[in-house]
Image (cartoon, rainbow, N blue to C red; front, side):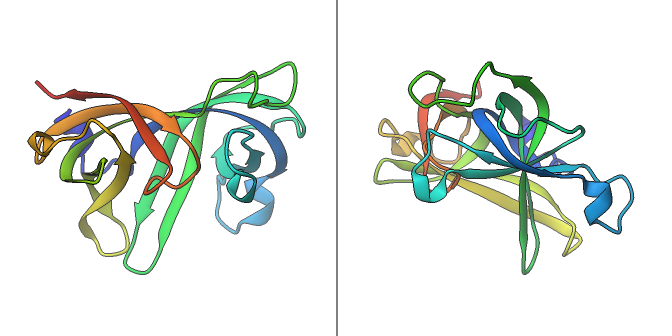
Length: 183
């Protein structure tokens, strides 16, 4: 678990599985001056509220607009002094037979490891260390997860968390189903 929390060079500590429908895509080589740019995607996530049901992602190949996909990958978070770059990095996109549907498909899920820094009001503030490209030093990245069973005994301990993503914001929309301490 230390490799996830104190990895220094790893800008992602969150794996995700999301059922979503592709709305739009862009060939990175055509919209960037940088070489080897990947594809950029805009997905509709039917499980999320209508005012925040769009997810941005990137991957290595073109997909089919209007098609539903099971998306597996990781949330890449790179925080700088005056900016934060966040993107869902797709490792695997499995096409569905129809667009993604909240009544039929599983809820978006996350898995992550982190150090519990604070516990308050049924939520845990979890953090991990990473290299900050903008400052050239090490910084912490955070997630604030709803966890009704959270207790003060969790503070300053390492945990693996799994749960549902009720929206895109890792600071207010994510709910823990399972928490396992690092033994």
